[in-house]
Image 1 (spheres, rainbow, N blue to C red):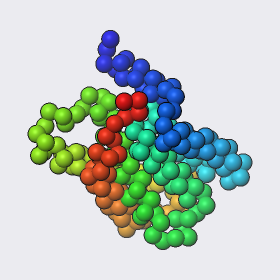
Image 2 (cartoon, rainbow, N blue to C red):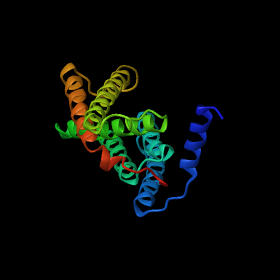
Image 3 (spheres, one colour):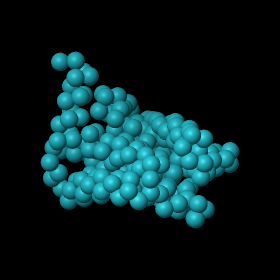
Length: 202
């Protein structure tokens, strides 16, 4: 069977596998919270807010598709929902430093998921010498985070110019957000043994 087909089957199996631990059940509960939030936001805040939550739903289901460890799954779900609700409730405008905290946390966790995805695709560092494995893991996770942070800022620019001018963008804000995401990804890379030590069902 082709590798791509095997990977597809693994994603489906991961998504359909029943939650077995308290952490997995909590993450699934947060996914339900995300769906309910999407409906609430659609009726209460309009199209732009609904679009933010629709995008966030991709973030809360991705860990389950990847069969991520419950620790990472739960952390991603919490961070994504906090980030989405912060946008809806305009906490980024109300609290000057909140944007940096969210970028650091969420960017780092998504970078960790990117690392899990690589492992699912068969890209692994298990053959590397142990003294290099940690450095390579941290370096790649940080690189993932910086790249994802740049994409995030492009999305904010698109949103500001084509969806809602209230979405704040500036050169200083962009560089600061990418830097914060890089720091979060560096921390995630150093914590990968804890975040992605054993995946769901293993």
